[in-house]
Image (tube, rainbow, N blue to C red; front, side, top):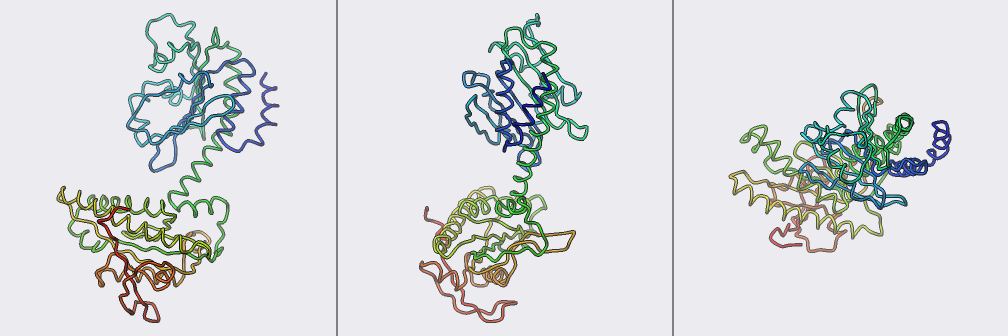
Length: 416
């Protein structure tokens, strides 16, 4: 029986492109062999600053009642997709999910701590109570068997797989041995897919979506750089040093997180990518081509105006809590930058360099002196046909010739 599965798996698994597709194919095979599965659940720890664990649950189309519809404040996201043979749901959980009482009293905790499989036969159970709450939930649905196995990596229980059946007499001893072998085989590829997906997600969080994807695709060689046209954004918190002296370290961290929590989503939702968090500063780019440069420029202005509105409302809440307000300065410029790997053979950084980047940061540094929240270069002002306020030419540190600087109102009291 296992030899037949290995022959099938060695042929079919080569073309599989995702964990979801592997789920579908493997379950389809087991269903054709008569295992009558009504639920499959796979859970794993993650490497993600916001998501501690995730689970994949599959149910047949006619057995949607086997989905766990309970709610938890630790839920991060939930996505359900439909295939030919059923529904697959991915659920992501926030930090703390592995410390809940629900996890502590589950067979999952048992298999991961003992590194042993667990089987429960509803058919043979004669007691009124069940050893685990999940079994109480499954019994009224007609489940006859529950089987869970740990997935080990380097000798450590990193994940688990569980199956539920409503086959009249549950699974036989021989079927359980076969399932144990099958799950060990396919779990290797499952985990490879999941680790790949998590790695790409982690790179996106730490490097940005475009940069993370570029690094993941293998463009990682020292000196490998691209010339791109981009609007460059540099912003930082005004009087950050003064605020740091007045606040405790914990309050400073909270202030930074508050600002970044407003600014980063706003930048990304308008087509930008945050490349660096530099202390209290943000370096971001909005790449464009000749055909869409005006459109991209307008998106940048919309982002900076919406961020101004968000900061205005946020500061109203801070005032109610007797907290110091957050004000920022934003420098914007448009030009050619070098985007790629710089550093040494043992320490690389994927970033942007060029005179345009330096000019953007110097423009941002003029916000305090000129009393403006948003300043832009002549290049950007020429790129976007809106009403600009010209502030004259200014000598900027490290820039050879005086630069014309323009301002545009954040218009914080108007909705967009």
